[in-house]
Length: 260
Image (cartoon, rainbow, N blue to C red):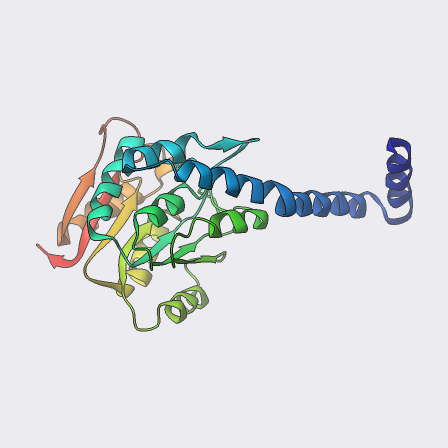
């Protein structure tokens, strides 16, 4: 059997070239992941979810769940995301918009504390500089995070494009966002543009959160701390930070249109 497989592989390389061969192998791997591995991962994750009764346990699951190298660990400080979730748990947001899906960890956590009928939209740029760009085969996993009658929409586009904004507006209809989480393009211009484009969709009193408000290396936090210092002056706000000397991370919340 192995000999036949080797012969077929060599035949493809001779007749179609190495690039074609690699492409076919990649498609086979993706087919396997979609058909077998992801459904198994979903099954295992749901089994673990069924054991959870507290938000602290939920956060532990997100950070610790791993199966054959696949994980959904949030790129967050555990204590910070836990405090944010406790705030969100009280308001049970019905409309959530996330910019920056990355590893899917925050998407998972937000879906768990949102209203059972919530609409959750997550935007991510394939190949994004700041940790974005999950492969297509992860889409079924991320969609499986929905509980009850929740609907999860995954938009794999540049959040700064007008077409992306139009897609979001079409999903929302006449509804307003309860919680907007901005964790995409970390350049000063990028985070500012995300705020300017998508804050218009947030209801009065809704929460807008920025990740990486603590100063650190430019590679990790970009211009987010600078923009945060500017924007927080104009709104009622809250800073969730484990340690100001931790060099990055930190979550800043503004309560939209509630001005100082």
